[in-house]
Amino acid sequence: MKLLVQSCHMSIYFNRYAVFAALFLTSAQLAHAQDSRQSANSSLRSDYPSLYAIVTVEGKAFSKKLKVEVDLGETPDQINTAKEYADSLTNKKSYATILNFMAAAGFELVESRDNNLSIQGTGGTYNTMFILRKKRNSN
Image (cartoon, rainbow, N blue to C red; front, side, top):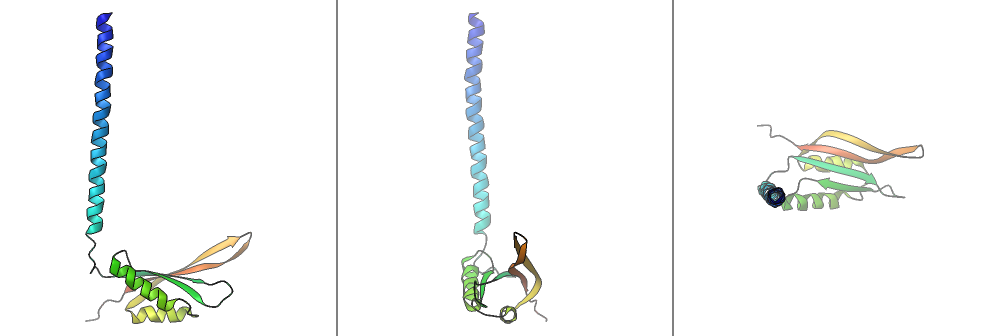
């Protein structure tokens, strides 16, 4: 009986350390995965070119003016340029003006999408998304 109790106690003692070892290994793997993600994000250079742009346009309530958001990427330079574009384009009244501005900035339209919203059977376009690509040099 004493041997049985001692072997159960030894088994519980061993299992406790096995759980701690498993927790330690799991936390070490999570830390390594997080470091890998951080190094991948830090590999984005500030001079990385904006090859694509996503321009989201929606109408303002009780107005013909348009609200524009521009997404060029996540580097600080891309965010600043996108904000400058959005500030220049917001309050314009024409979708063509927005597309002409982006064409002058060197982008060409790839695709446009209308996002629709339907509330109790009434539908309409909520916003329009333009996906643009930087024009390739024609050398």
